[in-house]
Image (cartoon, rainbow, N blue to C red):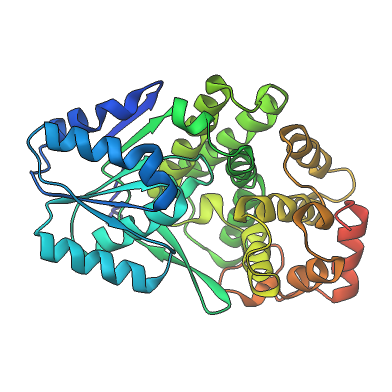
Length: 352
């Protein structure tokens, strides 16, 4: 008797395009979310977008309250959750980059409230996914949460964000190449649950950005449009899979280990991109596609070397040789590799 079942949570509404920040009120009305939103933002995104959203919500007869977070932390999540309770909020709106959106997402999950994502930078696929990423002590924790009920991505605002944030988002998507390879490997060797549909969707987003890398340029809304579509698709793939597997493999473990060794030096997406070059080499060797990954990142203006990240060669070697210790997730790294083998991979791929 067939008894398999699954529960997939996806965004109900995705609005992307020029000037769509004005549509937040219409999205709220369409979803019938109530009258008391808690708007979660950080200092710069507040000026860029949140103040306008708050004014629009007030003009529509709603009663928003603003909560400004300075850092992505579990303390911020608790503070926002408590603010939502005090405000008797009916839903949360996260406006900003990864910091505000991850905090709002996780606080909404803890408070059992719906959450809207309004990104001001296309910096990573957490803008759409059902996971939050929070640094604590010397590590970064990926925590399950609800995906946003709606996403409103204004390409005019996103195109004006620092270009480094956009290239980090692109690199995060390109890393899906190796994440899916690791997922298939874990399925074959350890019977980890695997979804062909989620894997295909994830790979498609990576291929789309690699093939378009030479046309993605700063200040172009058309470029941001493409990147946002890829970020949305990657987030949906994770929701379908019920895990971060379609977008997180050994390259993410490498990045998380770099966070411990050289905290705050490079952007997450850039670290993941460099990790993808080396992990692709581990999967396919000299004749594989690691050069395709490297060249696409270079065309985008994303780092491809330790120097580009601002870390030392020794940091890269240590991160790659110890990345398997980060979490219990089987990847091409298996039980780990020696420091000499890690150095060889980094040298052959030009990372160091």
